[in-house]
Length: 144
Image (cartoon, rainbow, N blue to C red; front, side):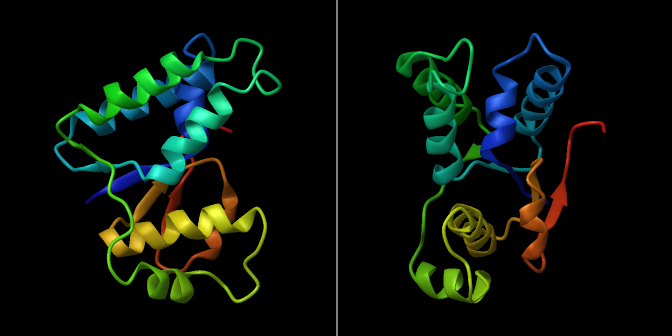
């Protein structure tokens, strides 16, 4: 079964000097080896570049070249896919996003709709907000 990871897992994976970073890095390495496909959707990838390079968020932000290089390296793996919105996406989004979805909830609904459109059932994330989308399994890969 195909899975995906959210922005926070990608960001944590760059900080391998911490326990959380080590867990995130191992998870991505394991998922990227297959045999199932790892879908990494563009909103998560661009969110990773945004967060990982932001000097107000990280003590040691990545340079833009490092962040983009991380994305290029991940996408070069044979079991990793980064599909975008297909035909009919807006209808899938409308049926996925609760009626009052707005503001910071929109990126999660965007990813959830992409998951549905591409048949991805599980997302690895610390973001509990994904639990509000029916039919999506949310896995927190980090120990409490």
